[in-house]
Image 1 (spheres, rainbow, N blue to C red):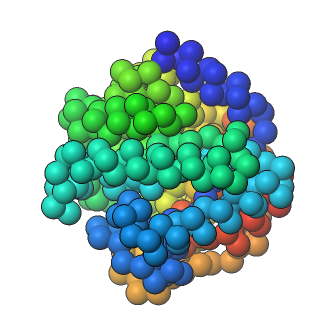
Image 2 (image 1 turned 120 degrees about the vertical axis):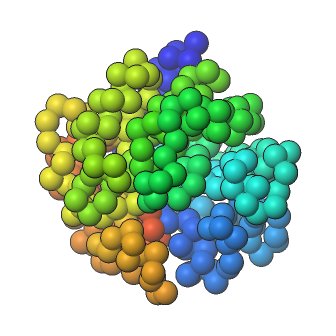
Length: 310
């Protein structure tokens, strides 16, 4: 049944491009002036001002997709809503479960309230720790155990799919894919890379996707790339394997992860230049389905990308 759900999702999305949002967390911090504990957006749902900011944020993207007559993938604010990050924030597992359910309900309400009934509700999963630390890499079994609870809660709450973003190791990617398959929910896996276009362990994107596909019998619906500038990975996307890349959510900034961690001001880059980079990437990615942004991007960037790539 799990592969049937993935086939149904792909059929529902068809062959057209879908927009998604930009850099949620950086937008909340730098553009809305809100504090995010441990870079987590889900606590905003419990605060009226935070909830209003999230609604403004996502409504802008929903409206832009409608204006361009494009589909939309509507993320849940759950990138940090896993049991381990909850423990860091002093939250019990049950409280994290409730946060995940609340985030799904919020996304569903936005979809229904803004006339975008066809929008894909995407349960977002993040890495178990700091994605850029090679000393905190999980193996497949560890990753399955760590992520299964969040995947299960999101699936039970009614998401159409789950996507793991800013994943920097194949072991964690395999464990997440296996957890999703166990729950019968479609999954996409989005890797982040360094400025040389490789995962933090040195693997190329081609090597990483091939390894995960081999370990999971090709279960992921597609792979993505996020939290890196196109100039960091564009030259990697050559050959038939690149047909497995279905989503790009790039940074606006050309800075490395280490430089971004030290930045005290938002580097928003150039929206039009970023859109041109996406258009160039699209020529090498026949399986591309989802276009959005990551750190430093907002509605300006995604609107430009949509106009350029539509």
